[in-house]
Amino acid sequence: MPAAPLVTIIALCHNHAPYLREALDSILAQEYAPVEVWLVDNGSTDGSPAILQAYARAQPGWHLLLLPANSGNCRAFNQAFFQSQGEFVVDFATDDVLLPQRLRQQVALFQSLPPDYGMVYSNCELISEAGVSLGLYHRATAGGLHPRPASGWVFGEVLRRYFISTPTMLMRRATLLALGGYDEALSYEDFDFWVRASRDWRFQYQDAVTTRKRKHPRSMSAQVTTTHDPYLLSTLAVCRKALALSRTPAEARALAGRLRYELLHALRRRQWDAARQATGLLVDVIGRIVGLRSQA
Image (cartoon, rainbow, N blue to C red; front, side, top):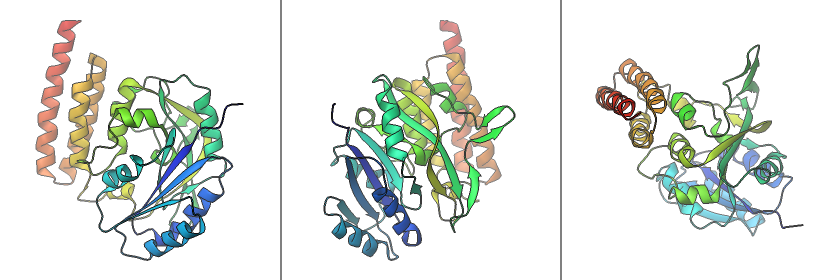
């Protein structure tokens, strides 16, 4: 039998000391090998570096990067990614928890798919800061799962709506390399990865719970709901990329719907510069729709 593919886990930490041991123990509990682990501390000011150093000493094969200051998730991830070797890659925030079967299930799915699949993702259990279950991300309803997962060529769906639980993603290394890694000019990574990767690579949903995602006030996802959303300008920068990548009127219409949502988001939070940018982008997208229709 061929050797099992190497999986790289890039464990990104910024002030995750209360959750860090549980997260790192979940790496050790994986029912899969071989695994390459990179521990990256992104300028933590709590006790996280000492915990990471202790685990690195206990696991001599693990790599440790202690960054002197917070350089942003995208740059911190890239510093480890471009030194790593795994055929598949997990971007693991160390306030979350990997279930033991995570890598075994996802690698098996990847190996059953054609090589143009760039990412697989799954369901996850949402947990509170204290670890109490809050239910599943993809919830069973009378009409099926909500949000409804999508598989295959999903570029238009990625523009239209959110349906991927970021902590569950297993990415193909070749896909990340084709994109040049994460865009370090952005303040967050997942939407940009979805947009750029789904243009040329297929995605696959796996109907399994593989991860526990922690919800707490300091998590990145929680910041989107604050009065000053620190990620909105990055979202609009990704929408500019999506405009250039859109090839059909349907894709451009999906992007227009996204921009209307982001415009309202900016107005509600009185982020006037973002609102102006969203308005200008929406005008450009409408022009793109007209142009694509005339070519049809």
